[in-house]
Image (cartoon, rainbow, N blue to C red; front, top):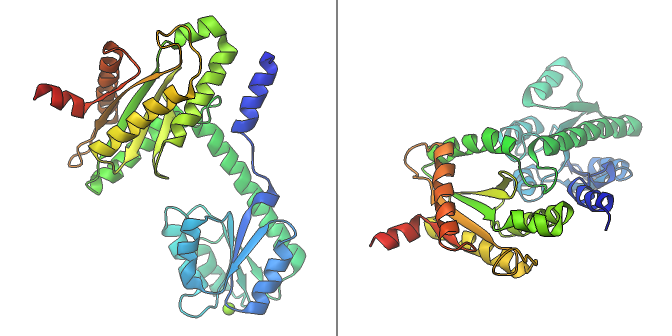
Amino acid sequence: MTQTTAYTTLEASVYASKGLADCKVLVVDDEQSSCLLITTILSDIVQCEFLHDPARVIDYCEKQPPDLIVLDINMPGINGIELCQQLKQNRNTSACPVVFITGDGNAETQNKCWQAGASDYVRKPVVASTLVHRVKNLLQSKLRLDLLTELTFKDQLTALYNRYYLFTEIPTQLKRLSRESKSLGVIMIDIDYFKGFNDRYGHVAGDKCLFDVAQTLKDQLPGPHDSIVRFGGEEFSVFLPDTTQEECRNIGQRMVDAIANLSIDNEASPLGKVTISAGYVISPPTNTPDLEQLLSEADLYLYEAKLAGKARLTGSTEKQNQAC
Ligand SMILES: [Mg+2]
């Protein structure tokens, strides 16, 4: 494999960006005929689903977040304006653009739409080309923003989060967890004998190894709010919100085992294959912990794992056991 081909393959898999036809639009309208009309118009350009019952929208969006919502205003139970306010207050749906469909275009209704957080509104009777173009423009902006966010927060080689994400997003997460009296598990990971791997097999193989290790580590994350960051060259840090010491230890051990089971040759290692060492800590749930301090504590355990012979996990539990 030439160097160019290797990089192209990695980057293509990292930035396989989503197109307009892959976008999901949710239409919420209590009237069947109106819902059918809007869904039929939009199905030409996007994947379209609908709900007649506004009470089911929040739950639906948490399970399968849409890229855009088309919302009727007058509905029984909860009206479109109230529903839009709820969507904008929800962490999972706040960034999703909402387009109102309204039969009443007076100034007061328009103001209510904007105040509720609407991105746009379309008057009834719906003109197909107007609806299509408004939805298309909003989705294209969202796709560009999603890609920009991806490029800002993700490491280009491994598609894991980068240090910028670590130092901008994790402190916010720590504060929230502390408010909720929940702890954060932190695992620091380093690939063993990686310099030897690069010297022996070359940097292209080194990059491929980093990519494979990163994907395997990511596969071990159990929850949607868990995250993994490429901390430096061959070093990774894992963040597990609301995790017990035992869960953190189990996940760390699974990661050590999963990398060993990949059986990537590394003749520079006495084990003959690529392995990782890892160290973990749990933040105390009672006071707001300092991220730098947590990272350096986890790093000390990682150092202990290296000293103890590498290819293993060390953490606060092991330390306590040794002290007993
Ligand atoms: Mg209605």
